[in-house]
Amino acid sequence: MENAFFALAARMRNIRRWGLMRNSFEENLLEHSQMTAVLAHALAVIRRDVFGRAADPEEAAAAALFHDMSEIITGDLPTPVKYLNEDIRRSYKAVESQAEAQLLSLLPEDMRPAYGELLHGGSGETRELVKAADKLSAYIKCIEELRAGNEEFRSAEKQIRETLEASRLPEIAYFMERFLPSFGMTLDELTQG
Image 1 (spheres, rainbow, N blue to C red):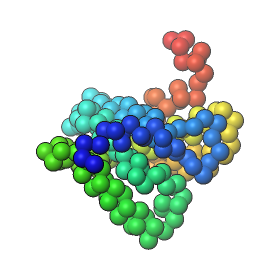
Image 2 (spheres, one colour):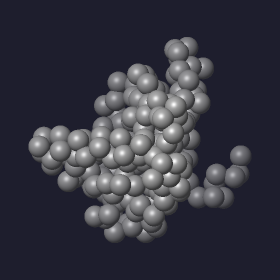
Image 3 (cartoon, rainbow, N blue to C red):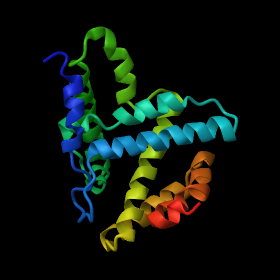
Image 4 (cartoon, rainbow, N blue to C red):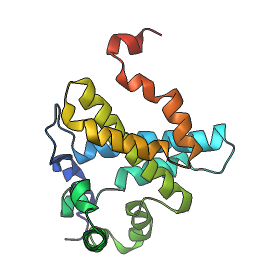
């Protein structure tokens, strides 16, 4: 049905993440996308204002809001399954592309180009910032789960931290050094400036 794109976007709240893991608190796709948008915006601001490189924080935030929207159709395939081998990874990418095309078909034709780019994570360098923000969002989820005493996330936390630490993006190192430590703090610690 044409013009159902935004009604489906509202369904992002129904897609549960971390399906193979016992969670202390559930996270849905809408919550993840919002946090990823906050982080992508921050990384773009850091790139532009701290490192003096071209970046568009608004594009990064918008692309992050839509970067996983295809999961409304595909569901959230757990990372260990998605990347188990190259055949599964390639097949999932094809399914993801078909889902994106289906979503775009639910928009008026003159709006499709703008949203097509957002569904792919933005243009050029924005895409790398959105992917980095996506990793940061997953890492923050791990930190929060570990803080709640859920050891189920220990391995994921270690693997994602190693990936982030190996990143060639200076924005990641900057964010991790200056902002990440506060995610392990209590509300009282956070508000006692």
